[in-house]
Image 1 (tube, rainbow, N blue to C red):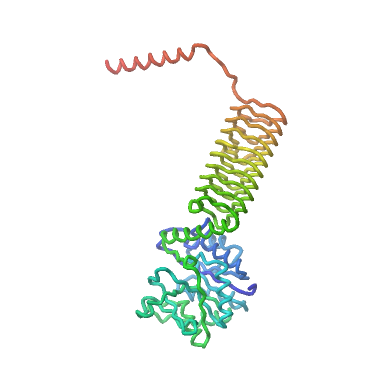
Image 2: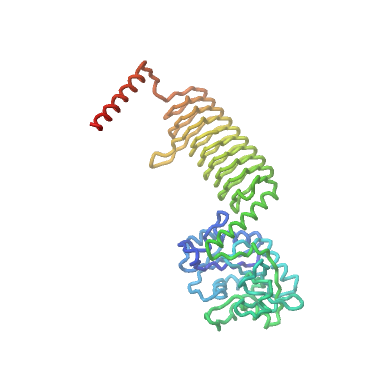
Length: 454
């Protein structure tokens, strides 16, 4: 497959989404739709992948999403076969398999792509297409088979007879063939139709006219969901989440209430990880063996080491790394912060741009003051240090190993190892002044009421 080419047609406008974001860049599982297809093609072993984009779809964002793969532009939208021909140079230099996919059918798995190729070869066919059997065939194009199981033709619903509409095998729109044949058929497609467009499905008739056998491989219906509206985008997200949850549990993670856990396409949960209800994983999260993620936590671009405990109500932002056996508790937020092995931040804290040593204890209400309005600065807390409740650590600052910072302190200078640091005003007591305050306040209130009534 290293000499093979995959072409992803991603030039659609997606007007029904009512969005300025190009349709192939809308996200599923935290990733652009086109990236899901790229990942599937890579996993299936396609050596070259080309994305065909539209001229107004934001070439630079598409190129970034597709990197390191090539992006070519379909300047005029003259149909799906015309779009595929934008990758003619890639096809011409490919002597292996060629496969064509759609950017708005993003849930096709690598296994299905491999099955298509294998099915074509096993059936002795020169062309293979992907079919599916939905619960409601509705107005999908039908795949009509010969008696021997090969494909006779594809019939669009509007052109189908009553007998053909009774067929339940539908066309998903994906095709694979040897690259030289695919290129020849694409160039032979005409546009003698009501819209004057070049349709990819016409390659079936061209292959048949040459006496080429056409095979069909079937995919689960939830892999070939097309996305043209926000409702269909939500349906695809639901289908992807179901797949991701099943894969996570199959790999050994425990999801106590799977339907309430939302995973990114690249979330990695090791065996014996436990995820409680209502947890959201953004992109770039890896959780090691035996860690526990409690309810209502949100993790993104973060790593959690073995045996660590997160939440409930914790937030790990990009750059957060929680060490082995460490604790991140209620309403604690970490950003670009390393929490060392066995360290604890159990309550109501913000720890940004910081490095916290093994076994350190961060008291409730602690914040690292990492931003002065112009730049970000780091806080370093040594192993075994104890930071008292409601402490503000003004970066850049370093707290030595084994040091204690008294509760309520504002620390602006480095603290040495094993030192006790205070950074708060001295407490002062004035006997009787609370009573005097109350009496004066009552008198003012009474005077105000009397004046209003007068």
